[in-house]
Image: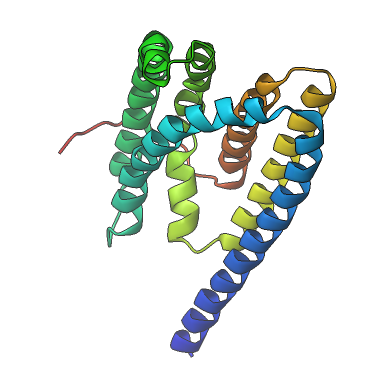
Amino acid sequence: MVENKGNSTVLGSIRWSIIGQALSRVMMIGVSIVLARLLAPEDFGLMAMAMVIIGFMETFYELGTGSAIIQKKEISQELLSSLFYINIFFGIFLAILFGSSGHFVAELYQDDRVAPILQVMGLVFFISSFGLVHHALMRRNLNFDRLTIIETITLVIDSVVAIVLAVMGWSVWALVYSLLANRLALTVLLFVSEKWRPGFQFSIT
C-alpha cells in the first residue's frame, strides 16, 4: 500500500513536470513571436551575449544547493539555514562581481552595450539566492504540482513585463527587466508556497 502510494506520487510528479515543460514551451513560443515584431534583432543578440555568461554561472550557482538538499537522506534545520545564508553571500558576491566587471566582458565581445546589461543582470544572483533552498525543498518533496503553478505564473509575469516594456520602446532593456521580474516573482512565490524559514543557525561543516 505504501509502495503504491509512493509510485503514485512519483508518477504524479512526472506528469506535472511534463505539463509544466509543455506549458512553458508553448508560452515562450507565443511570446517570442510577439517580441520578434516589437524588438530589433540586435536586441535579442545583446541579450543572448549576456545570457551566455549569466546562464552558465546561474546553473552552477543553483546546482550546489539542489544537490546538497535533494541527495541527502536526512536534512537538518542547521544545514538548510547554512545553505540559505551561504547562497545570499554568494548572491551578493556575484552581483558585485558582475557590476564591476561588465566592461571587461564587453571588451571581450567588442561591444560596449553589453557592459550595462551585465551589470544590471548581476542582480539576478542576489534575487534568486533567497529562493534556492525553497526550490530545492519543493523538488525534494516532489511538489511538482505547486512548482508548475509557480513557474507558470512567473512566466506570465515575465511575458507581460517584456511585452509592455517592448511596446514602450525599451528595446533590449525590455528583455533585461523581464528577466529580473521573472526571478523576483519566482523567489516571492517560492517563499510563500514553501513554509520553511531560515533560523539563526550556521555551520560550514
